[in-house]
Structures are given as C-alpha cells and as structure tokens.
Image (cartoon, rainbow, N blue to C red; front, side, top):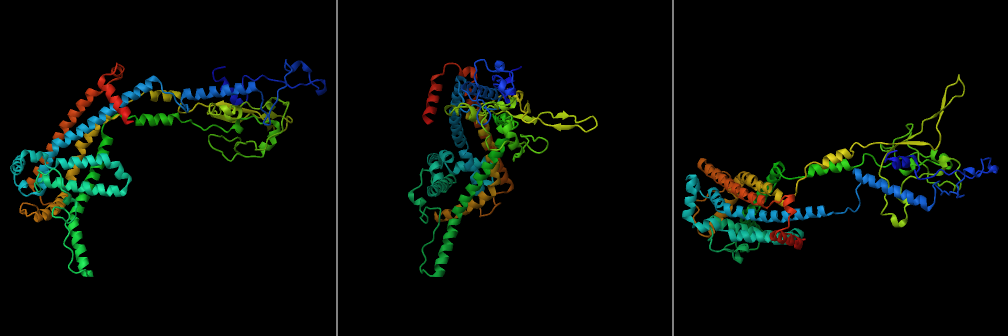
Length: 555
C-alpha cells in the first residue's frame, strides 16, 4: 500500500500492527485445538469497550496518532500548538523592526517639515477668510500685503511655539487623557486655548513676540481671555440672574464654536484620510493571509469517535436504539435516518472475542491511548472520513420470492475524501509574493494621505471657518481697541467673491505643491534606507545596530 496505509487502517477500525489473534479453542469448544493459538500462549485481554489492552498496543497507537498529526501539519490542515522560530524568522523580524523604527522617525520628520513649510502660507489663507483687504488684491499681492503688516519672521513663525507646546502635550499626555475623562477635559481646555492663541498671533491680533500666553489667558472673563463673561448682576433676583446667565452663554459661544469647528475639521480630515488610504497602493498581505487562513480550515469536522468504531456484538442492540442528535454534512446519515451511535452504557468485559468484530477498535484518539503525562503531546486525530455501512448481503429465500437484504452488524466501510482546499491550493497561495509590512514601506502612502485629504477638508469647512473666526475675532479685537472696518461681518459667504475665491484656491494649490515636494523628499530618503534581503544579510553597520538597540529598549 501507500503512505496512507495507517490512515486507511485506522479508518477501518484496526491498526496494521495488530496481529490477528484467534481464541483458545480446544476440543471442548469444538475448535481445532491449540495449533491456532499464539505461539507464546499469550492470552489477549480487552477492556470494557472491546479494545486490546497492553503496553505495546498503547505505544503503537500513540505513534500512529503522532504520525497522523504530522501528516495534518504537513498538508496545512493543522498547525503545531507551539511553533518554533528558526534563524530565518528571527532575521526577518529584526529586519522588520529596523525598517519600522526608521519609518517612524521619517514620519515624524516629514510631519515637522510639512508644518514648517506650510506655516506661513496657511497664515495667509486664514487672512483671506478674515480680512476684506485680502480679497481686493491679486494672489501674488496677498503675500506683499501680509509682509507689510508683519515682519518676515512673524509671518512664518508667529504662533509656532504655542503650536509646538500643544503637540508636545498631546504626545506625552495623550494616553493619560484617554484613560481619565477629567484629565482629558483639562487637557482639551488648555490645548484649545493654545490653539486660539496661535490663531490670534498668526492673524496679527496679538503680538508675536510673546511666545506663550500668560496665565490670565486661561481664566474666563479676564481682560485677555477669549471667553467673555459680563460683570455680576447688581441684584440677584430671578430676572437678573437669567439675564446674566444668558450673557455668559452668548459670550462663551464664539469660543465654543471654535471648538466645534476644530472637531468638525479633524473628523472630516480623518474620514478623508481613511477613504484615500484604502485607494492608495501600499504593501499589504491581508488578502493573501485571509485566503491562506480560509484554505487551511478543514473541509469537515472530524467524525465522532463512536461513529467510526466497529461496534462489538454486545453493544449492537443498545446502539440500534440510540439516534444521533447531530446530523450534519460532516456526519452523513445512513439509510436516511441519521448516524447511529452507541449509548453511554458500557458493554460487559470480554476476555476472549467471539469474532473479528469483537477485537475492538484501534481508533486513534489521544484521550483513549495516551497516558496522563502525554496528554499535551498527543492530540486527537483531525482527519475526516465518509463512513457508510457495508454493502448489504442479499439472501435469496426462494427463486420465486423477492430477495431480502440484511446488513452485517459491526461491519463498516470508510473512504478518505480529499478536501476542496487541498495542499496544492495552499502551496499556490504561499508562493504568491509577500510584502514587508512596516512603517518604512507604508511611509509614501501615509504621507500622501495628508497631501490629498487636508486640502479638500479645508475647502469644505471654509464657510464654517469664516463664521466661527469672525465671531471669535470681532469681540476680542473690540475689547483690545482694534479697528473692525477690515474684518468681515459674521456670515458664511462673506469672503467668497470672485477675487477672494481665486486667492483662496491659489493658496490651496501652493499648499498642495509644497506638500508634494516634502512628500517626494521624504519618500526619497525612505527609499535610500530600504534594504533587500541580500543587503540585510551583510554584517550590520553601526547605525543599524544603534537603531535595533533603541528598538529593544522601547520594547
């Protein structure tokens, strides 16, 4: 036979290593004497289930179970519980760790360069939406107008210290803020004030020489706070308190609107990033891994142990009275009535079997043959069989009567059925190209999402930005004694004249152009840091060892 002989024999209910042992049948039993007994006069014993019990049989069956599990692992149906990691896997992991660290560093570097390059242009864009004079000149003259109102350093770096402080707070205290709602509320309050202070400095409302706001800026109702609170009512009557509460709500609404605008913009930009990210080419093994996982699943669940065991004669009558409650495709029914299984009542102990069916089953199961100390080592058989009763025996009662059929009890036939997702399909999937999934390889797509997502998000939220910014700036500038003649009235479409739209679209195109150049620069640097398998197998340089050491410290 072939290498499947142990599997076929186990399916038939016996092991190829078991010798056929005939009972002692002397003259008293009407037998043929002791010529057919075992040569060493050994009397084979059976347990209450009709199975042979001796150490040699237990060892042989455990070996066959191990061989079955090895076959299942080779064809991909089963996997070892504790996989071993060879040197190649460890080398591959270190390679991915190195590129992950480099990719994250370049991602932070690219974000800083993007922010620094678009800082001044974005400030001009905000002025176009806030001041009337920027909608009356051409696009090139908008930068000259901003240069006349502020110095070059203030134009490109005003508000940057507070922005950097807010980013640092998010980076160092973001996890604590997510875990504690009160800490999160305090962080949000401080960072929102820092964002408002940055906005005032970039638009010339506050002096850019003060890098950080004073503590009074965070106190509602102070002279420099963006939250306006009127003086306390002179009489604490019901009407006076209601009027004062209404004035407080009206004074806080611009700052609350500023918060909602930032949330809407961030949410919209995040959704656009996700939508664009799914469309960009990037290294991903998701489809391949999913296909391998689906192909590795067995086509059918293993048939229950009782369905594969040749039933001893003592159990045949009890088994015929019990019907299986589980009639699934993996357990095909016989004669359309469902697979019959023995009851839980154990048969009588048999010291000598009466026929071949009484020899018991050598079905391979770890919980029946493995010892207690090897329960973890040997697992149950994972293969599935089609089990059907044997061909009926035709009995002719007479030439004129109809033939009747009778099934021989305890005789079963089994056939190994190839699964649909066989080893060839798994081999084909595993031979498909595998990509390295790390930040260095995903860096171009990650940075490209900012290029394509932030511009549409700014344009879509521009009407809301005009309404929120004018409502926030006009009361604050009035308290500081500044002129409001050049500031738009609170509305949704105040600056959207023909020239205003051209200037706004011009700044957006310039921002996209700058971001594209930054994307190309960082992508080129990332390409220079990529290492093939052959290059990685060479002795590591000092920089590579330093990067890996830093990753181990972080882990």
